[in-house]
Length: 440
Ligand SMILES: Cc1ncc(COP(=O)(O)O)c(C=O)c1O
Image 1: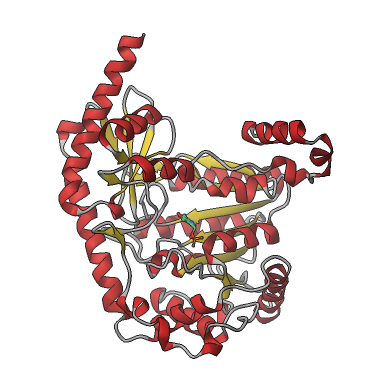
Image 2: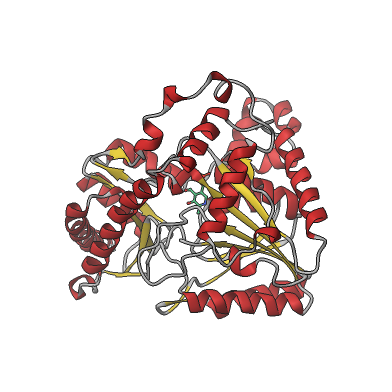
């Protein structure tokens, strides 16, 4: 059991022995990780200079937003705001999101995929998918750079074994590492859940077209040999593509390619439309090849509907109405492109800065080409110590993603401040090293 869960259980035991006995197995195992949320809360208090912990994008200290969404609150009739939304979401929104998926992913065939079901944003979609497909002891394969919340969703709540491989093989995505891990887990269990998140959090990486094709073909081969694969794509940062990457969802390559691959696309308006607090996401299924697609997709849709009904009943109606209005708005694409152009310039500037050899004795950037973040590998000192130094001495917030890696959200730092940010990180690493050497 996680030590944080033990700590909480001890506290409950101290407070009331009988309350502890009332907790379920899951209740006993639950805890709140001291990960990104805790580090970001510290940064909110102390990072007066740059707060590069955030999973959002900011400009002039305010979140990015699209005027076509911001300017519309009184444009709705009461029935689009105040009444319950249907359990599976507003029908017109589901249709509009499906059209968007097909537009964004020209390789996808419309009749192979379900109508998206509305979720309370992507986290909820992940949780529903875990409830549907993950049993205790199942293997979940994902790159070793992954969003920490997968642990709570798949491991703590559902008892999955999270099995990782090195995300990178030099400057490339480690396709062979992924396939070897899936094969290994397939031999142990016969069924594997593969969770792919591109653009990746925390690494800010999306495979190149060739890597994506190799990955899909490799998974097909394993599935065709008899291993059942549930392939989940977490497309949270879809559309934030900057250089040399496959610009469709990997879902489009995994859809209908094997009788043993069932694909689940999870996406959300959250980041794609800069509406982090709205909580609008979607689950879309693609049937295995040779399946009676209509029957299967309808039955899965009903199961998801049951899960939503039995947990949150339905999702926010005003948020769905606003997202739908934006999807139909003539300025949407231009407004999104404007924000993505800012992020593209920040990514290019970041790349130019961190590629400079002058930083090489203290940190090395991992490959990045998309999303909100990049990771740097720190040499000779613990990343958590550097994070605290940056926060306490310089008012700069970043995330210690592991003992060696810092995650930096260039999405939340203005282009003109990026050089200063990396120079300060460089200095903080040097100072932290000196402090740790004098302590020894
Ligand atoms: C990879 C990844 N997946 C899912 C989410 C959750 O998205 P949402 O806010 O839509 O639940 C995040 C948010 O940070 C993320 O980084």
